[in-house]
Image (cartoon, rainbow, N blue to C red):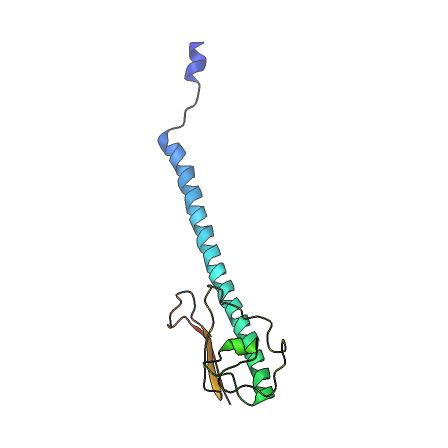
Amino acid sequence: MRSSRHSQHRFTCIEIMVPILVVGLLTTIVVQSLRGATDKAKRTKAQADIAELETALDRYYRDNGYYPTTDQGLLALVTPPTNGIVPLVYYTGAYIERLPKDPWGNPYFYQSDGNSYVLKSLGPDGVESADDIVATQSQ
């Protein structure tokens, strides 16, 4: 009986810690990889939204001869503006169905004098900086 007790194998602290460290290291690598993929997907989504908004703005321009002003904002693509220059031609639902928010939950930045515009996502930090995704249009 006594000899069978001595043959039992017990794990040392090092034998337990090594697999835990390996699993932790692998988890860290996978999480970092996924974080990079998520950031890239959000930037791609913002670029697609901006392209859709640019198309809607171009249709609005073709119908009216000017872009919505900064005061009218992108909301002019969803509902007819009631302030500033009121469009003579407005096709409800023809420009865009609803205004998207950028992938970080912020509204897209829009500025226009009616002849040109700046449209952008302020990126993950939500402030104007080098990581902004920008579209600028001039006529």
